[in-house]
Length: 226
Length: 226
DNA sequence: TTCATAGTTCGATGCTAATCGAAGCATTAA
DNA sequence: TTAATGCTTCGATTAGCATCGAACTATGAA
Image (cartoon, rainbow over all chains, first blue to last red; front, side, top):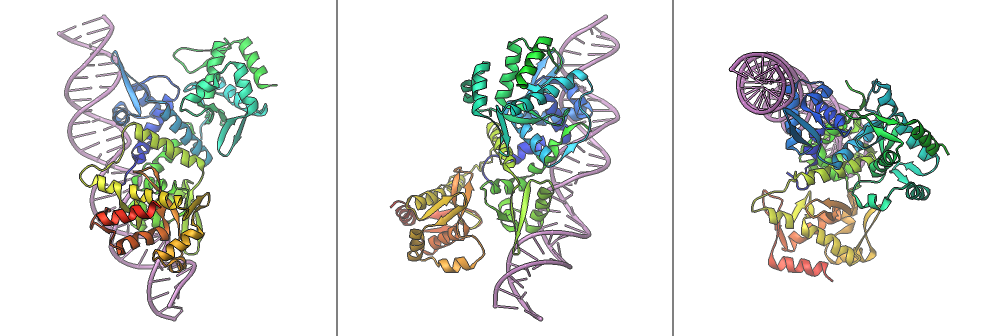
């Protein structure tokens, strides 16, 4: 027995395929019922119940009872971060499960991934910001350039407020419909939030779809195509 | 089968206690041999070999052959990041492996880590030697300064004898009870050996505790506080 | 050469955990 | 009340894997 934080216990909870499927499904940010999670994981409700009990005991997810349903959410942003990092590693070492992404064209085009923009437009945003040299990606991760910091300020994003959080500002998150990176982290989340505020886009209730207005999509294109 | 990166595969690799111990040991940034990792994980060399083969196949660690040793290092900064995030989660949810019971304070104060001194006194030793400029630490690791070489000789340590061994003279080892580095390597081991010889301390059988006598502890304090 | 050390492979064992059928609660609807 | 739905508990099965002893390979030392 060694001292220190028991990472094996946490990692083992994320290391079962059924549980990992449930957790990635929860990365949409929506609360899902036990039955929905069973569906996502491809196991029977009994099995799912057993897994959820373990995840709850390990404080990876938190339940919220409502009627005769139990809704689950991830217990904190650190879980999201762990899942994102693990996705990055899995991608790097080539552990990808080949399958095409969401069939729904709207989902494929633009959806939320936890709290940031994913789908084709998410990937386009990432590439566009990189092309405009507002972000740069290297082996250590993604970061805002000086030009990017200036852009954020003029675009109405409070970087200091974001930095106060412990969450990393920028992070790559692998998009499983487009197979490319999109922008996560607190900056990625703030951008999407700003899109909402500007009226460029809105979220469709009970779904992960992000729907851009025509004008909003045009502004978005202008943003990423200098 | 779902789409997307297979995070379960990666997480499962980190989710075994023996492997997790190996990986946390590698977080010091130093390359470690298979035998050292077996020691860290508390398993036999055969078992360690099996784990290392899995970690290597999963591209979590990379081996480097040198003589008849195989040195392992983490395969990239993303692995370090993943381990750190998992540590943070484990810490948050209270999954800390802290030994309870009467021996705990003694272990925390001074214990052997492989064959050198760890715990609060191990960290104090490292810091004291650094403050006296007998060792210096940089990106490449730790090394004895000229003053440190002179010190070693007067303190009764046969440096030439140590150099004849293949083992590195100085090495940093991360202390998870104190969250700081202590001194490992053949010089670290020789120092502890010398403490035994001088009657400053003795090892408690069937335990990792190192118990200093009152006089021994005083001498130790004099050593690290110039 | 012979011996020692570092590491691996093989095989057997034993434990853990994932899985699901069946039955049991709990909540809501009628 | 009865029926239906959502979810959990129980029990049995199964499969995977961690573990280690023994034997083997490879490198270096005497």
